[in-house]
Figure 1: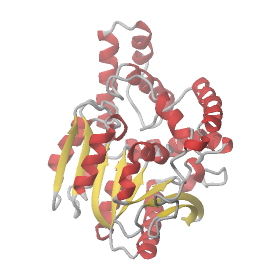
Figure 2: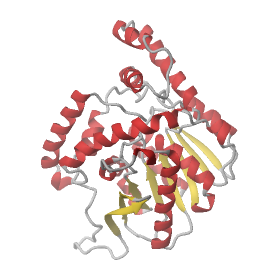
Figure 3: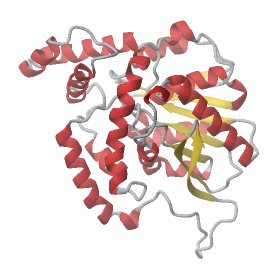
Figure 4: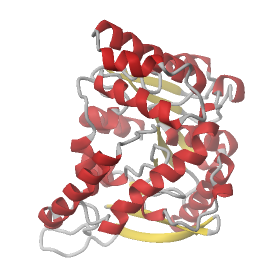
Length: 351
């Protein structure tokens, strides 16, 4: 959620990714077809990438599964503006044996970014409308009545709203890094970061954080400062202080050309600029008390970026025909990548 990266790190990542693209080109797991032992493509499999016209703009999707008749699972990435499908596939390609996995670079994100996207379209309602068009396309093409939705961080906001508005489309909603009350969550996150700075007697952190009066939905510079120290103090990832290994895995695939890598970061800045205030004002305790779909929360015990404590409270508050909360004891904000094997097995149990 709002993983803001410094310009210097962006340059380093781009250069590193260009090298990695060359070194790992033959190892790319994203686009290859599903084949039998003798090399023949499995008849019912699907391995496809395409652009769909969603909401008046071309948006990239990936469709992968060993059997296209399997249940559809749509992965809603976080950010906003941070496509994680390639990283999701790196850790969870085994799920393609059980689901038709749909990766989607949302409006203004990754391969779906272009400079002609109207800023006025960067609002939550438009994203829900885009998702509705995507779901309708998938249901019609693959003759399905419902889809599974997995929402991560910002994607969990979209997932809750979509499941509320269109329950007839949703077989089950799965949320991780779950957004609930962002204003309160940001307050908790800031207080944790400042407390850790004082506990560690980190004068630079204390000075920078003390200049932040209160987390807001408009000051992205303050947000970047807080997220920097949160990561350094282990409040985003459990016992890790860098996203760099994941970022290099994410960008070192054939999914991204060099231009795509540049657009990846342009899209991140663009999306955050227009969506952060709307995200900050989200409070599902006031907005949504009931979902008419099965609900699963997969939460990192040590998530101080988007408060898992608040997510637990919301889970207890929320009414649903079936619901279950699964804790990931060795995870922060990203259990799908911090404890991938457990996450993978948990998804299979939901099926």
